[in-house]
Image (cartoon, one colour):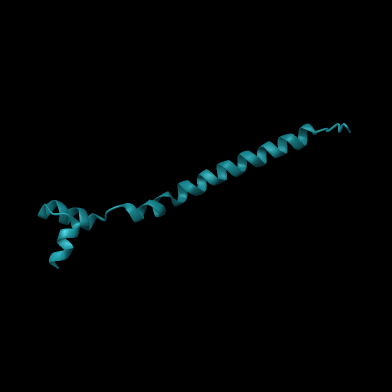
Length: 66
């Protein structure tokens, strides 16, 4: 069975680690920047909240009356 002796230069290992960390941090920054856009789909608007508080009805019931 052949034995391969591999040598990983410390500079190359450091560069690889930096690239890995930069990719992870870049991904987290991207998620943070688009967090509001992604979850705005699931949030109520201020108008819907005001109507619900004023009438005591659910937004679905208020839409049926219109």
